[in-house]
Amino acid sequence: MNSVVKWILFLFVLVSLLLNVILIGIYSSRAPKCSSQRTHSLRGKHDERSRVFADLTRDEYLQVQRYMLKQKDLDISTRQLTKPSENFLFLIELSLPKKVDVLSYLDGGASKPVREATVVVFYGSKGLIKEYVVGPLPNPTYHQDVTVKRYKTELPFNARTVTIGEYELLFQFLKKELFGKLPELMKESFGADKKLNPFEQMPRGLQSGDRKTWVSFFRDMSGMYIHPVGFEVLINHMSLNESEWKVEKLLYNGQYFDTVKELQQKYAAGSVKRIIYKETPDYGSLKPKNKPLQLSPLQYYTEGKRFSVSGNHVLYLDWSFAFGLSSLTGMRVFDVRFKGERIAYELSVQEAMSVYGSVTPGMIITKFLDSSIGIGRFAHELVRGTDCPHEATYVDTYRYIDVKSSVRARNSICIFEHNFGQPLRRHFSDFFSNSYGGMVNSALVFRTITAIGNYDYMWDFIFYQSGSVEIKVHATGYISSSYLVNGSLKHGHQVAENVLGNIHTHFINFKVDLDVLGVKNVFQTKDMEFVNVSVPWMPNR
Ligand SMILES: *[C@@H]1O[C@H](CO)[C@@H](O)[C@H](O)[C@H]1NC(C)=O
Ligand SMILES: *[C@@H]1O[C@H](CO)[C@@H](O)[C@H](O)[C@H]1NC(C)=O
Ligand SMILES: *[C@@H]1O[C@H](CO)[C@@H](O)[C@H](O)[C@H]1NC(C)=O
Ligand SMILES: [Cu+2]
Image 1 (tube, rainbow, N blue to C red):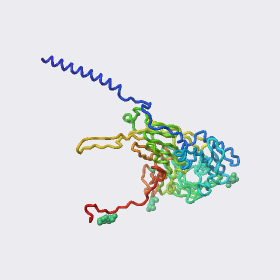
Image 2: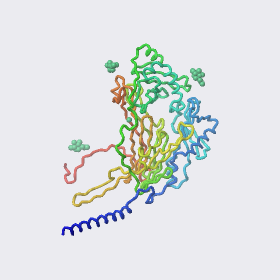
Image 3: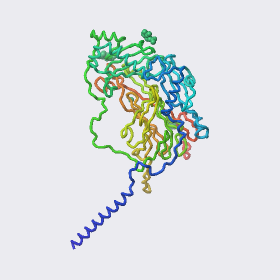
Image 4: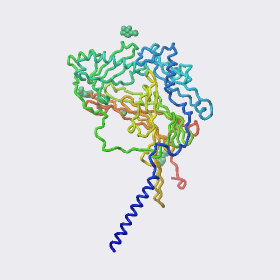
């Protein structure tokens, strides 16, 4: 009796094992496999006409540069180390066509707007900045001075940003006129054979026309921005003749001096509170301090990508848009459509400002207006798996700003779809009946990261399946800091020995040109008001 039960049990286990093996075999062949190939076709079609918004190509930059150099009367140089007194071809960028022309091209079947470039020349010889429109691309035949048309006035030469050519002269100036004249101080305070890195502050003066820059010095270590040494100088570099530049003020260990000579003499006489060099711990290093326990989770495309990038045009489920990366203002998208309908003509970054407070001049009046030096020009290569997911689509960009020929920024934009880890919508009904409906929140991210000095801004344009767009910016990188002196702590927190992390605020400006149901959108600015109303069944309350 017992043995019959045993046999039946044994057979049962055997059959169930076999069934399991068979069923697993059948179902595993049906389960989705990771695939780099798209298994379903896209909903929309790429639109070649999005090229009206595209940044200039390498060839277009070259054609514009050649055309400008051919204009012998302009006497322009493209040498990287062009001096301030000479004429330098500073910038070539797409000149965005007028919206009305683009809309009649996209919607009204009008002909394609003429493709043109904006060209900025710093005329040291004339003491002027000029902005030109050069066209038609790809084979330019005309250039038009649009400075007064665009800015209502001629631009004073000192309004120009500092070029690599001028930085080179500034570095030589510091070496010769500052470090070279303070050998004893440099050795004792900052270490023999140790390099100091300058970090400059803006604005360069207190009134229009000034070109006087406070430069603070930092140790040549990783994360130099949080290794201030306690030495700051005010350089007047207004003159186009660099032999006339001057050190106008110095701050050493919290004490002011009028000339390099005064500091040198007082230092030698022992009437200055000295900073004595000592090694600093490498606390600014970006190397991981611990080994990760194990690999972090990854996302992958089970059935291939649900988006596609062709030139500067992106398709994603019900979305489509065109994009560009301005070397001055940064990321931008145009002709943003959901289910074929345009909802925005333009969404773009315009400005990133940071405003500081400090007791020392290095950060006391500092307001960085990043577009004045360029935001998009600092978009560098994105690292797979860290800056963006491994499987993202990476796009190269090309730019021409303060260079001798256009440069390629490899993989400087990434595009990926990403599960945000919370449902886009969901409801569980527990009254009267139990039911559930939810939707996975996968959205498309369009990203670039710009490393502007100490800061790295991550710019994300996110396209959700609900038809909403989100623009997000994250700041990372390093804080700006000052050497700790008496009174510093009113303007920030101490972050290391003798280091103050300065109080500051970031302001980011975007342009949002919504075109929901046509171009005539209104923006309601009237204040919201609360009014008391009585309910119909109690009219007297
Ligand atoms: C630059 O300035 C120095 C000193 O004032 C002067 O000797 C020199 O001639 C100037 N150079 C030019 C090109 O004007
Ligand atoms: C620091 O500043 C305060 C306020 O100005 C002053 O009273 C104090 O004497 C200063 N201390 C030193 C060491 O300079
Ligand atoms: C609404 O009624 C309450 C109670 O009478 C009053 O305190 C309040 O000021 C009223 N608010 C407005 C906006 O009129
Ligand atoms: Cu900050």
